[in-house]
Image 1 (cartoon, rainbow, N blue to C red):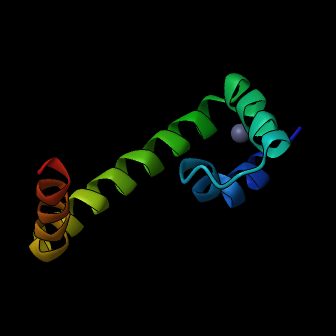
Image 2: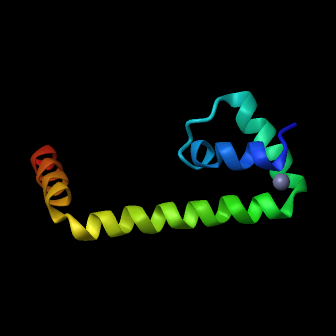
Length: 75
Ligand SMILES: [Zn+2]
């Protein structure tokens, strides 16, 4: 099983869903037992979501392109 430092190293991979099956399982086992790392991962997720939302708000062009693409598909 991973140590806390190993969990911290892979935290962004886990929140991005880029971790393989076994490493992700090891992470989840560790998180089930370690409150500190659970809080750390939770914080990473919140930060990432806020960053994603801020990115959309600051740059409306991709959003408009997505809407246009969806409108074309619906026709
Ligand atoms: Zn830990």
